Length: 179
Image (cartoon, rainbow, N blue to C red; front, top):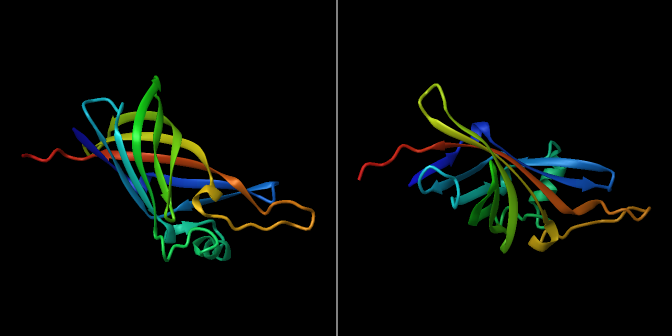
């Protein structure tokens, strides 16, 4: 069994949501951690755990970030973490996988399925084994209690319901622990 930990220095956890239907706002979490546990040399059936600190959210706009941390959206004070725990990690052919698991935002847990592309596994110059993954999917924010919205005079919704998730994750294999 091997454990791989997320390397936060070489990983990005992003989300994108339509604003006023005409443009996209990109945000990310600056503080997060996670791991995957594998049996043997394959990532097939890996167990994945991940969490992000809601207070670390940034969209490059302080007022918007404050609003996202408020009870209109994430309520960072009462629910400080976003969490994901996998229920399956299936190879769909080649380097493509399907990751299914339980995503918890606020106090609401829903099953989500994400597409994963394994970018490769290498040994770095320091003798560490690293693997890279690109993960994509989408969720409906309202299903997780992020319900705030407004409508413009012209009838356009200010914030779309669908939120696209885009994660570039590099993981580092932990040294096995001697028994």
